[in-house]
Figure: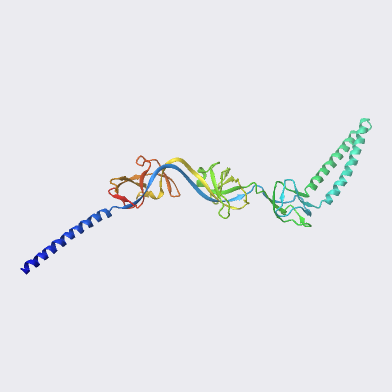
Length: 353
């Protein structure tokens, strides 16, 4: 009797364990069946606008930034401005000693006055047929010669003062009173910061994409200044052979606080479309033949998707977005794999992360 009871207990225990093992096995199979589906991140392909920009370094320059020199040598008599002075066009900035020229002018004026008197007498004699034509022409020539010399001295005297050629600010003054100046010696620097432009050298590979009127955003990384938006005003007609670049210029507006030689960073819009097929650049993969392709998703069930390999032609890539050619297999708002697409095959089903 005892043996029968023990046997029954063992049989029930064995049967119960076997049943539990089957349940566990079924659970494991189900779990594995779900886990083998690749987990991917998705994005949408969309028809939208696309721009491409390049960033290059440039400088702020002023077309009115010059070192002033004198055309004549002489002793500096007076410096009428100092660094920081605001000046107007035609204002006298510096005066040199012109006493010798003034004396020469006075002497010539006296000679000219006498020569004009003699010319008048010769004209009177010629009118009375008493003087010769030779004497009259000699008197005329003497007057013209003295007038020309006097004019030359007056021009030289005017060069003994230095005047501002345009409105601006005196940045530096090098000249000193009592100093002997010469045409080779700079006297002062005059700058007009109201007229500024940004100049940059651009690689020749961008030449076909940058035209007069191309949009530019100018940033100032080293200064607490707002970015300025402007357009290319001129394009150079020469490629620099040493670095294979050409020069662009753009007028700068709202230029408060800008000075020549300030560092600028240019963002140039070299490519723009109003509507095109755009996908995340991370979604574009390459095969062994270096062909670009995307994985496009199609829903199978609520949480499972099939994948289709769609080959594409990439036009431009900028800041994580890629513009691709129109493709009949890729419609607007199509789901594409952005992450986890490597190693997937056409036979796979995937899940969305």
